[in-house]
Length: 226
Image 1: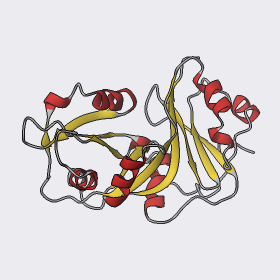
Image 2 (image 1 turned 180 degrees about the vertical axis):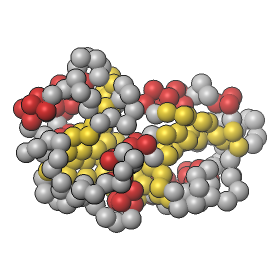
Image 3 (image 1 turned 90 degrees about the horizontal axis):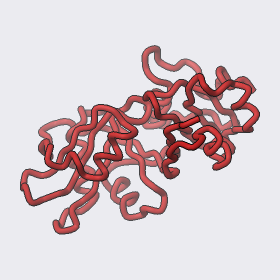
Image 4 (image 1 turned 90 degrees about the vertical axis):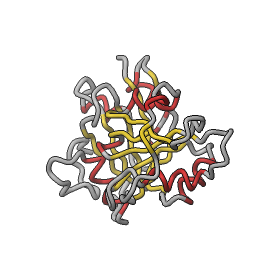
């Protein structure tokens, strides 16, 4: 299989838009890659971060030029789970950090009057620091009350799309789904926005889905040291 040009539903991507961002945007509209077991190699969307994004029956491997096409082919990726094989991910990451396998969810921005305010005092929150390690242009938001430490991060994330992350303050009575809806007011109306959630974090997953997100794919990121 040609790792750089197998179509499988990925043909005709918009010029100037990262392939992962384009495919996720199409998935948000109900247009998914072809279920053919195929995979495609693409450039990373962020320097120093690589990953695999897998849809039903089709996968995308974002790796830099240090990995040859021959090496990728020898690792036997495929769109039926092979591209997310832990041995493949470990080989590509080398001794670098490997993130958990996450569910990718998509929604659309609500626009309008933002329900959250900038909170620079939350910049050192562990979730904000994690976002900074794998995303770009990370901004931190929350509620106006200074004693409320509910955090929402908004950044340039997966495939160059806006990406949100959040953590509610357990001392407050916020409902997770309401925080998700408030986070969507930070994104222009109808703009596709993504979120990533560990499958085992069922409470967060339910909150994202109740707040308007839908699952479309999986993602596993790593910062390679080869």
